[in-house]
Length: 357
Image 1 (cartoon, rainbow, N blue to C red):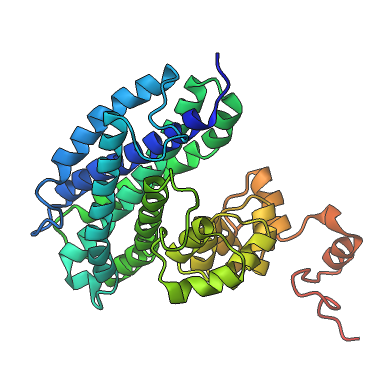
Image 2: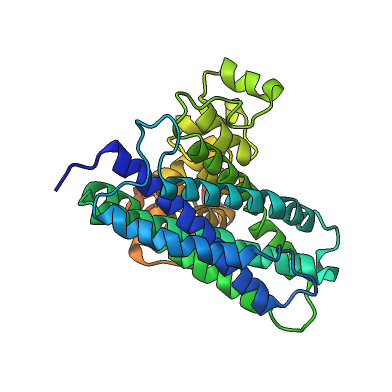
């Protein structure tokens, strides 16, 4: 079996991205059908293009498993009919992203969301799209690497599969909530708005991914190829941050300073940083929770009840799931706890346990 070379590697990435993108489109349309908006936001050829692409992608995936790469980095331009077809599908996918992006942005900015049922339905379906795209990406890429006997790569990607599948299930549950004919409450719609707040950034990151792959044969991926305006590119250039990285962090609304602050605590991906920011954690606040392997949603809940990251991690390992019932301290944590407990003091208050000094 041949070693995983660069052509096989980039072909796996390219095919996987295409498959994930079009799979996300199909599930997006399916979610919209369940929600039944009065006006569909999709172009007429939407599903036809997606299914045509997925048919070819299935064949390219099988050929890749037989070590037949779709692309060769030695080319100066795409040379085969399949590669030309793949590039055409990629451009079509990018156009669709740019088509739907302003509609999602507009839905998010709707002032009275509960009164705009179509905006609500678009946001709920868009959550499924983002979740489905991510799930398909990690599942497909892991399988491609496994087929190519690159098990280390496959195992690394596979670590994200369970989390991605779980969120896809949650997203489908959200669609179920809004698929009935009842009245939407303001509280429920506010929760949806927050949950969907990163969807436009996801779509912008897909556009950036597409730009990278469309220009995969270029000698250098420049800020111009990344479609970053010159005046905005200057601050990234001055910070010596490459165009490829800059594009992802810009997609999620970060600047160069943010990039370095999150990198300093070990967060290398803009989506993760954006999730922590949405949970209202600054990098230095998020650091301890990240080191304990606690997700933003859990960190928010436990922090609001006065727990820090190490204590939360210890309780979660023990099987505690409700911070309102979890003990703040263990008796063995310190001698101070024992003495306060014996004297009737409250260890949560500190000090002298209520006695006058």
